[in-house]
Amino acid sequence: MTVFDSRVDISRLRSGHGVKWGALAPGTLGAWVADMDFPVAPVIRQRLAEVTDHGYPHWPGGDPVVAAFGDRMVSRFGWEPAPGQTRVFTDLIQILQVIIEVATSPGDRIGVYLPNYPPFLASIARAGRQIVSVSDPADLAGCALLLLVNPHNPTGRVFGRDALVALAAAAQQHDVIVLSDEIHADLVYAGHQHVPFASISADAAARTVTATSATKAFNIAGLRCAVAHLGPASIRAALDRFPLDYFGQPSTHGRVATVAAWREADGWLAGLMDVLTTNRAQVTRWAADLPWDTGYREPDGTYLAWLDFAPLGTDPAGLLEEKALVRLGRGADFAPEAASFVRLNFATSPQVLDQILSRITDAL
Image (cartoon, rainbow, N blue to C red; front, top):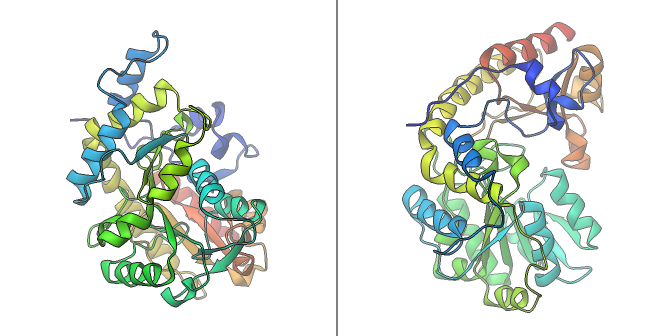
């Protein structure tokens, strides 16, 4: 069994190449970008070391990431991806951009639950598509694509089966392709369950692109490897028309780390979830003691807390970075109307989290 190490060495993080800590002024604590502070699972390090001295990869049994993805979906979520429909990409932003180009046209409407992950919003806008705020399945009328982030970033909501069934019915009624970002699926707390959107019905499976990666749950984002299961035949055909490797390929290291994570590191993941559960409870107690209603809802999944700090003005994250020496995610990046919100990343040791929360409290 892979053992989880919850110790966090801030000096190590500051001296590396990670943006979460490397971009900070000296003395500032990082709780912004969605990286974890924990060391990577030892088994992942071991598998990476085993391939470092080798050259071009050789996969005689086929791409191991595709096989590991299929097995994990069956064993962990009870969904069996269709054979031959999974492609390997570098990350979910690339998957979104590719799907936008092959499944929609300039000016098309793309439904999104706001607030949402800033690079996704930027990709949609840069592609010349319209962002449509979705709060109800009926909002899918007139959309060419629904971008569903489940578990949701930044709120941590895990969509229940009933909500997904209603969305699937609306997607069928309005003939909407669904891109389901399920990258946080392994980070769901007790009492909640992740349900792959493509598992809802045969029609949902046929219109859904399921995008996921081991990078969030196993803290290997720098290795860049993701998968997309392409339900729509039209999208598979469109991608088949592109030249070989037109979209690039993840490195051998990204593939090896992904396979090690999904096949060998669940013991590490269980230890991580114990720490994140403790941290989530700490944030919940802290938020309840703040002198105003933050609108905070304890996240069902992810390691992100979404809070309204309206009494601090229109840029509370900027103010807290200056006054508390803590960097949080800026709400305006996730939606223009969310400028008074902050996103707090609690994927660190309980000791570092205590420092972060104490600094904010003292500044208030």
